[in-house]
Image 1 (cartoon, rainbow, N blue to C red):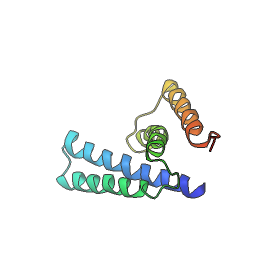
Image 2 (cartoon, rainbow, N blue to C red; image 1 turned 30 degrees about the horizontal axis):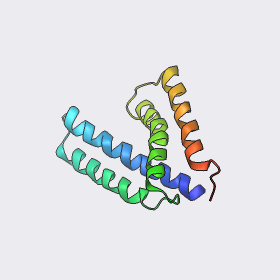
Image 3 (tube, rainbow, N blue to C red; image 1 turned 60 degrees about the vertical axis):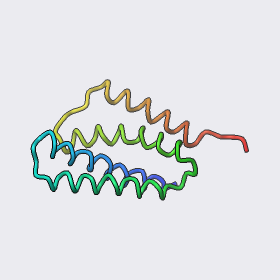
Image 4 (cartoon, rainbow, N blue to C red; image 1 turned 45 degrees about the vertical axis):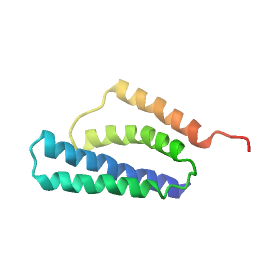
Length: 109
């Protein structure tokens, strides 16, 4: 389980960081190397996700979505200086509950 959590976090940093660098390049007129590093991060996200321990692609990527919501709020707060409000956190909590159900609900054989 720790490997799965580590991969979720590492992939999240690559996906959010990569997207952020592309955003900075296009929306904030940063140098082109921002976009290139961002693209490299997004490619690494795809590679890292392929090593996830959960077997079903759709379930893994859906779970990433929920976890990335939390990570995106934290990134915006810590890196970009935007402070999430109560509704952001409540919505994110619902997403984590959903992700937990998807990943760890007992399923029949």
